[in-house]
Image (cartoon, rainbow, N blue to C red; front, side, top):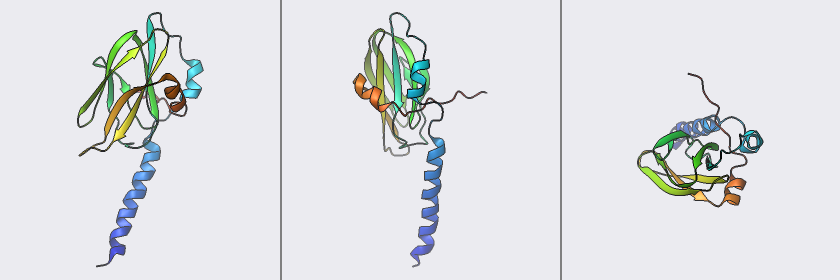
Length: 151
C-alpha cells in the first residue's frame, strides 16, 4: 500500500486546520491595551473577566452565562468581562455538556475565571474555574477582546 498518497491529504488537512486556528482566535485589543480604557466599576459591583489563554479548541466558541444570562462568547486566546453584584454567582458554559462553577465577586475588585479546553466525544469542553487575582491578571495579558460584530 502506498502511504505517501494517504499522508499528503492528512498533512493538508492538518495544515489547513492550523492555519484556520490562527484566524479563528479572538481578534481585537489585548487585555493590556484595554485595561486602562475600561470604565470604573459601579458601587457594589465587581468586574468578572472570563478568559481562555490557549488557542486549543479554536473552533469551539460557546456562549458564557453568569446566573443564566449570556455575557458573551468564549474564544481561544480571548476574554470578555461583565460587572456583577458582590456575592456568589454561577458561571455556565455548554458544549456537549454544561460545565458550571460557583464563584465569588468582591465589590470594587476584579475577579478572574480561566477557561480550559479538554477533549470531548464530538466537541471540546470549555471548563471554567476561578483563579487567584494575581494569576488571572498575569495569564490574561495577551488575550484579546473580540470585536463586536455588526448585524
